[in-house]
Image (cartoon, rainbow, N blue to C red; front, side, top):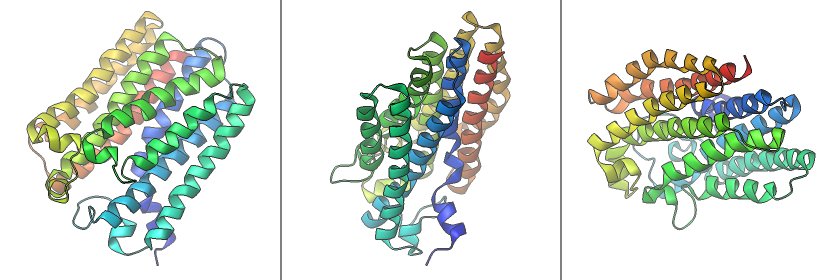
Length: 289
């Protein structure tokens, strides 16, 4: 039986910055037009974090029962390691989805935009079918599309809209930027797993692109957001703060371009998560100054 610490590790806390950064940017964009709501921002953050934990447990369950996680470098896998029963991991995933649904319903009630429930349902379905179901889209090389849409565009723009009832230029640029970093986070994770994913029949985008192109795609995913952040200077010159991320971007790029593999990519994965959080924090700070 898995311990509380192992359940926490199975939730993959290093991925939680990917859920936090969009809410920071979206809330700051709402604040820039005088519409920031602390309560709604907290609810949006709760939804995002619960969905991230849910998708992590769902991936653990689905990959585990398929045998994809039998021999893999990286975070603890509850199902594949046998530490937790598959049914228990699946229940944990749907518990997290349930928390996200309740918080999302509350947020929707506050906004009065009931059509947002359909968006929330789409988020849960996308989270589950990434690796779940008979034809998971994550196994067909479409994982980055789902991440970009839901952990970039929907998370950021949804946060802004639920507070300001409209979207802004910085919220759109920030949504694209943070979505690209989220894709880079997934890309470096899948780059590390190319050998085992290929053998397991999991055709991620990294597998389809091949190692060389996957590495270049990762680098593009962490550098292009800096450019998008700089473009926000049309609304506030403080957006140039994102240039401070050039140093971390270089440090993350070098080992990937140098051909780091296996466990050597684990620090890059963790660093990319913190890079996304830093991007969200800096851009948010620029929008509220």
